[in-house]
Image (cartoon, rainbow, N blue to C red):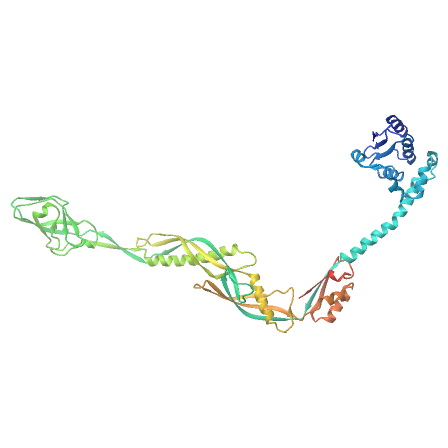
Length: 502
C-alpha cells in the first residue's frame, strides 16, 4: 500500500497541502508537522484536508506533537502517530474503536460542510466543554480512590508502653573453651583464639662479676749446667711449672752458664697475666726444648706479682630478669593490639593472654661478658581468647527467663540484658577461662498487644493513651508516634500499629 509522506514547513496552508495530495495520488497520506510549531490550527482546515483525501480515495494520517491538533485529529478520526516508522508499522483503520465512545455531536460535526464550521455552529470550545464534563466524574473518583488508599495503607504508628516491672539479677559463672560451647550447653561459651606478634626491648643494670687478668707474675730462677761445656740460653726461652694446665714463663735476658757451674738470679716473667702465674718455691723445674737435657732449673724464691681485676658483668640471672620485665611490657602492648582488631561484639579476656613462643631474642653484652647495663630485645608471639557478647547475653537471658521473679512474667523489649564481668581466671592446663558475671533483666506482666491494637485503631492520640492507662500498670504515660505527624488519629488498620513494651 503506497504511502505519501508530506513533510510540512512553516509556510504551508490548506491550499498547498491540497495540491500536494492531488499530485501524489497515494492510498495513504501522512502529514508531518514541524516540531513545536502550530499550523492549520482551525478545525475546518483539518476537515478540508481530510475531505480532499477522502474524495480521491486516500486515508489521512498525521505526525504531530501539539496537544490541541492531536485532540482535534482524534475527534475527526484521523490517526496520529509518533513517527514515520510507527505509521508504517501500525494499522490506520481505527474507526470502529473510536466511534463506539464518541459523543454524537462529534459525529454530526464530521457531516457538516466547511461553511457551517466557519460559522462556528460547533466551535472548539463546545467540543472541549463536552469532553471535559465527561472527565470530571472520573477524575473525582480517581482522587477519592487514591485518598482512600493513603488513609488506610500509608499511616503507621508506634506505641511505647512503659509497663510496671521488676528487675531480676543473678550471678552466673561461665567456662570459656576454645572453639566449643553452644546454646545447648548452658554455662559454656565458645572462645575464639587470636594470636599476634609484638616487639620490645628492656635495659637493666647487670649484677654479675668477672675476674680479668691484669698483671703478670715475675721472679728469679737458678740454673745448673750439667755438661762439661758452656751452655748459652737466649732471651725468651720458655720454662714451665709442671701443673695441669702447665704455667709458662720466659727468660728475660740471654745468659751463658759455664760448664759444671750454677747461675743464680736469672730473671723470668709469666707469659699470661693473672694470679695463675704466681708459683711456690721450687715449683718451676722444666726448660723447654733440647736445652732441657743440659740444664737443671729451680726457683729458690716464690714467683709473685700476678694479679686479676674484677669487673661488673652479665650473669644468667640478669638475662632471666630482663626477659621477665620485658614480657610484662609486651603483654600490655599485646592487649592493646588485640583490642584494636576486635569487632564490635567481641570481648577480650585479658587473663588468657599468654606467650605462645619467643620468636627472636638478642642480648648485649652476652652472658659473662663485661658490662654495666644489659639491653635485651625480644619478638614474642601472644595468644588470647575472645568471646562474643551476643552469645553471653543470650545465655544469660535464657538463665534469667528460667529464674524470672514472677511466674508468667515476660522480659520487656528495649531493655536488653545487662551483664558485667566480675572476675576471670585462666587455667593453663585446660586453656579455659572461668568467668564470674552479674546479669540483670527487667520483667513485666504479659500484655495482650493484639487487644490494645484493636482498641486504639482509629482513635485519637489522647484517647489511645487513656485506653492504655486504664488497662496497663505503667511507670509513666505511653508514648505514641504517628506517621505522618499531621494525622490526628491512629491508623485505621491495626496491622499498621507497632507496640513496644519497655
